[in-house]
Image 1 (cartoon, rainbow, N blue to C red):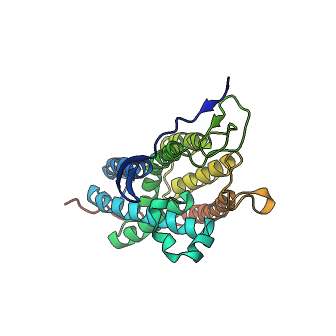
Image 2: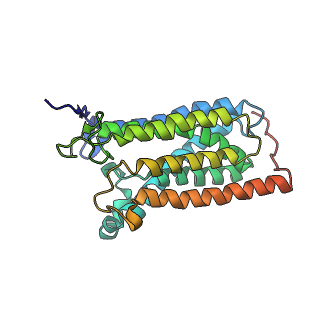
Image 3: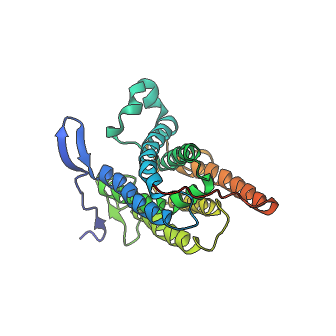
Amino acid sequence: MNQYLQHPNFDPVLLHIWGPIAIRWYSLLYVGGFLVGRMILRHLARQERYKFTEEDVEQLIVWGLLGAVIGARVIYCFVYDPISLIQDPFYLFKVYQGGLSFHGGILGVMVAGYIFAKKRGIPWWNLADAMCLCATPGLGMGRIGNFINGELYGRVTDVPWGMVFRGGGPLPRHPSQLYELMLESVILGIVLWVLKDRIKTDGILSVIFAVGYTLARFIVEFFRQPDAHLGYLLLGLTMGQWLSIVMLVGTLVTGWYLLRQAKLAPVPTGKKRKKH
């Protein structure tokens, strides 16, 4: 009798519409993450510390959703699968075939948020801290989507909770999607909300989020099966780990700069605009 768990083999497609067009669980969860984020941002907009309004949130969500999809797809195509992009330039637009980078999604959201903040006259780091507070639920819903799809599973293991995934062969593997769910969403989310009112300098909460995410991702990559077309790279690390290292270095430099600026002069917070 097989002592290991079997993946439930969910159908990743909720509704087939026509040809390659279908409604997938992953897509619904992706959008659901932004809807939860909208609720959190509207709650934060009512607090004195945050310098944006509930009206800003409605437009920010649209900007963030577009930024996430574009960033996730661009980074995936150019970093994870450039060969397919060279062979077919339209591969960049074939999102329905799958292929999104979480690092790229985070970068895309931040770039979209930065542009939005500048256009609306909102202090960037003040808005970024709020965005990070609502990012962890979205990350968690994305990992649930990965688990439903039976993708991004872990390496072969003999632990009692090892799971046999479709497409992963007959051997049990780490359910690495659930590891990431716990670290990137649950634990990191709790840490951020505990520190939310204790940290007064804008931007530091964003730094903690980025450091927490990169460390969680770096650790879980030791249990996650590397991308088949990439395998292990320099020093036996995966692409996800190298992207995490780059992100971590950039984050630490940013954190040092923010702390230095906070010591030299008060950080301008701006004034909250009147609500219409």
